[in-house]
Each structure stands twice: as C-alpha cells, then as structure tokens.
Image (tube, rainbow, N blue to C red; front, side, top):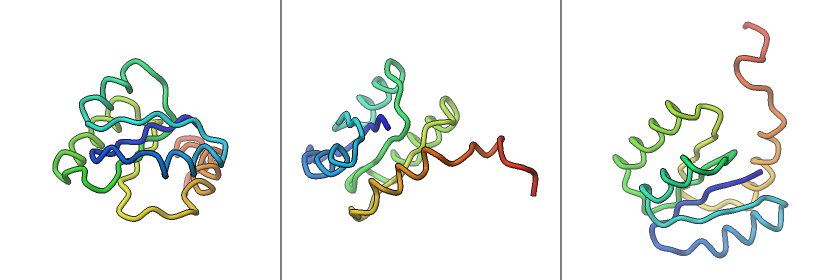
Length: 103
C-alpha cells in the first residue's frame, strides 16, 4: 500500500519504519498543503494524519480528499498503535462500499 503520512512535527521516522517493515511504501509530508499537492500528482492508497495537525484544518483536508478521491483512505491518528500496519493491510482486501451487496 502507498501511504502518505503527514506529521507537522517532522517526526515521520518511527511510523515510516514500522509501516515499511510491514511492506508499505511511505511518503512523508509536514504540511497539509504539501500533502494536498502530493495527492494531486501521485497515487496513494491511504493518508495518515499525525497528532499535531490542527483539527479544523484536518477536517477540511479530510473532506477535500473524500470529495476529490473517495477511494483514498484517510485516518487521523491520535495514538500510534503497532496494529495499524496490519489493519491497513487488511483494509486493502476489503471490497469497496459500492461493491458490497445491499443491506
């Protein structure tokens, strides 16, 4: 999975290392504007927003991503969990909402 990790504190290293160990490709950004530009020029499966991203800005960013590229998963992280890499891997195999049978 190609992941864009946004960390305004510039401390991408530990998270990136864990995700790379799990087989993901990770690109880091420190600003939401930088992340938005990367999303417009590169394909990502998921975007992870680290602690420290201002909530109103994060919500606006998440809304824009969902509007422009609804297939991209976006998560705002409050606490790093070692299970995240495995969870992201399992999400790759889930069918899209439109592909599931009606409830």
